[in-house]
Length: 299
Image (cartoon, rainbow, N blue to C red):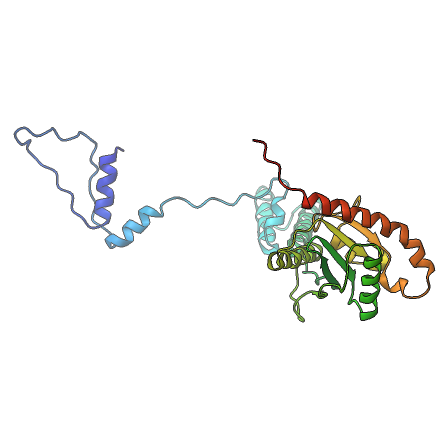
């Protein structure tokens, strides 16, 4: 079928009459030869016929998996009807009521198998119940817009003062600490169920930090985590996703110190922490000098 015939079908479906000349006019091009089909009276309105032409593509047939037997698709009543027909076909040469016992047993076994497979397939397609979101909270602050400080839970006033003293002694932060923000997850009290609680929690934490970076114009270079990352800090150990001193959730290198609460009593723990603070102070100076270097013009 050429384009002219197709055009005629669409015009007819839209209710537009197509005219063709019987005689060739002077100096006119000859009419294009084509196989005209005999027109039939319309059985439906033109608009419905046009919609039928647009939607005439056949719907794809659903294919059943090859590994799934036919009994798994049929219902128990359909399987029973198929077995009865099979018995009738095979017992045509026998007298009525004289079906072989072995054949009956095989048919009953097939029927039981069909029902069991149907029940198993119905159980397999049952969707898994959604899980509850992970719950955690942490305190957050940023040093000079460069180093992110995180601690599990809410940082008390004593812990804030201790942190300020430690950073001041190491020459990292002079004066008072920046404002401490407390973040909890999930954000809603009656949180809805989620499919993957761990991924949801990681995305929520990353979105919170990204929002602070955008509003405060931070340029994050490092993460200072105060506390142990293990079973005691679950699920934060999995949420931060720290491996080889790198947090893959926040895409930042990680420096890990002891929990601030454990440093409040006694001086032994502070003395043991001092070498690590000195190394951290040197890293702060190196990062500061790298940031302060002017751009060198190559021309």
